[in-house]
Structures are given as structure tokens and as C-alpha cells.
Length: 169
Image (cartoon, rainbow, N blue to C red; front, side):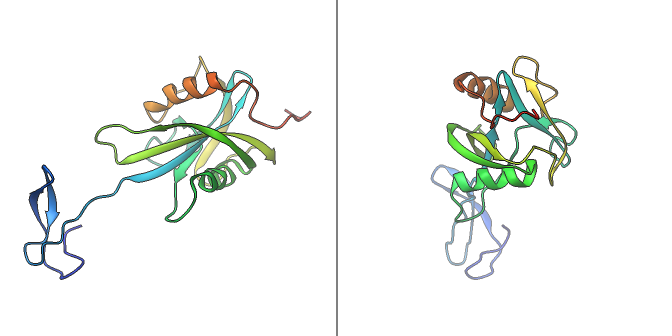
């Protein structure tokens, strides 16, 4: 943000709560950058996890959990189910929160949910080039450093497959 939304004056970096923040010298407005909230779904099949090869940056061509941003006013669980539909073309039951993940300097807070496929057969959706199941101890080139930890921690806590049984699988 470069201009004050209240009066239109250019913002300046001024100390506020121990750090420089964009501040309006005319009216005193202080801009606080909010974090972005994203969700991911962890779908497992025995010792394997379902990942998607990203079609967009960041991490284009590398693998990641199906994930995306939460819309303003959207419940996290609803966002997780929506992302599964958009990226995997399946409907899921969101089973439980695996964990919340954040890192210093990263504006994204990621909520990861274990989910079970209840209808549809997974296929690459809007942001993915491909999908695949991978052994937890043999993950492909991942787009995000945190994903290996999330997969290992999350998959080890899932005792049953998180997809519906199907003769075609």
C-alpha cells in the first residue's frame, strides 16, 4: 500500500509497535499487513500421499499438497473441500486438522486438513499439471520446503486410508 486509504496522502515508514509500518503523516492512519491464510488437504492411501505437480509459480513443475487461499469470510474446512474440488476434481470429507504451519518472513499461514475422498476419481484440475500418489519416504521434488515435514507428520498420524475404498484404485 502506497497511499492512505482515508485521505490519499503518500504513506511513510514510521515506527509503530517496535517496527516500521506504512503510516500516513497527515491523518495518522497505520497500515497493518495481514497474513494470507491458505489450506491444504492431506489425502493418503496406506503409506502413500496424493500430491499435485504445480502448473503455476511458485514451484511450477514441482509437487505439493493440493492447496489454495481461503476466501474472505470462508470457513477453513469449506475452503479445504473447495480446493480439493478445484485441484483434484473430487469431493472430500474434511476429517480433522493436521496442523497449522507458518515461518518467520512468510506471510502465509497454512492450515492442513486430513481428508477422505467421498466421490469422484482424482484427476489434475485447474492449477495442476498432474497428480500422483507417492510413498511418504520417497517424495518427489517438492515445491515448498515445509511440505516434506507436513507429509511425514500428517501421514504418520493417519491410521487409515483417507480415500474411499474403490475397486478401480
